Length: 174
Image 1 (cartoon, one colour):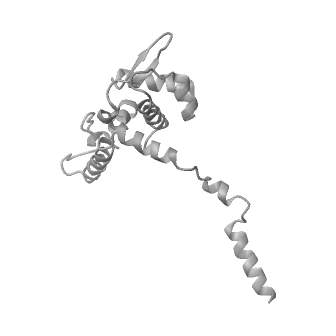
Image 2: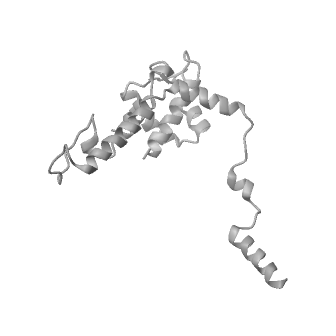
């Protein structure tokens, strides 16, 4: 499962991918535009900087920018930098393999075999999606008129059980 750190990291990276590549983006702008707590974003961007995905500049005109082109950074890069290996269990990881204590035969363990498939499918999706793709996708969605959230659209309607009771009550009177 993607952690809050991973989710906010992806949002921050898409924000940076949408910015002018020659300019630095201030951390407060990223935090405000994406509803990310500032202190949490500080830690996230530090991890992304240590992973070589963003660069920072202090002082006037400072901020953050991507280290590489958005087309050269994948979601897999970001998630691994922030959340660690993609494998759901240590014995299925390619980059951080850890044998299980209770496993007798690693090559035939049914749990490991299915978790290898989970890891491969997850890696295929995340490594096949670049920041450029997400940037384009988010700019297309931003150009459309915003829709009301489903909860707001349903506000004021009676709940389904209440509707059912009213219908049944009406039939009983007839």
